[in-house]
Length: 193
Image 1 (cartoon, one colour):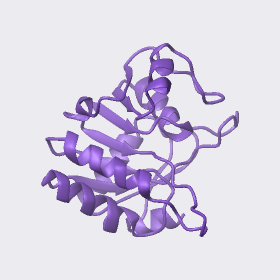
Image 2 (tube, rainbow, N blue to C red; image 1 turned 90 degrees about the horizontal axis):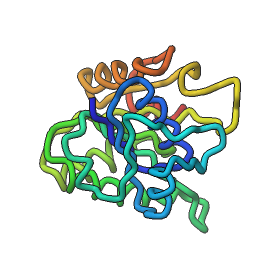
Image 3 (spheres, helix red, strand yellow; image 1 turned 120 degrees about the vertical axis):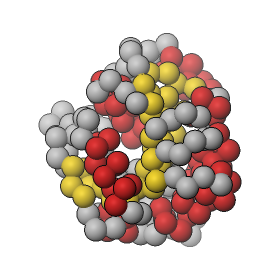
């Protein structure tokens, strides 16, 4: 299974390590070329996360995303000066994915965002750019950098898709490396968690 993770910060890199450890072929996409070079040299910038030595490639080349079975968006959503979420990174990620991905995939948002982001922003933006009917799901990031007690494997994971097929695909994916995966009734419920 090929998995592309957009954003290689503390959320994306942690996911990359878990998915690669579960045997997935992982592409870690990040626009920061210096970070990509460091990751490919095995240097982690996230406390407690080891860069996978097998099944992992960091890249700034969006074309490598094509052919992915799963694409996870894990980009920052900082607050702007008005204390509202800055969704510019999400919009950019949607454009990258929409242009690069030429076949149907499961697209999961892990970026912290308000309810409705998956349905009203991500699915619409990627769909408009790609013209492909992807599966979409939300699963809020569950990372506490440096915490030695809770990690990707033992922290319960909430998931919900825009339809049953997306929910099932997301549950199947996360079950590869998470011991407890909890499907919820809608992406909005997952996003509100």
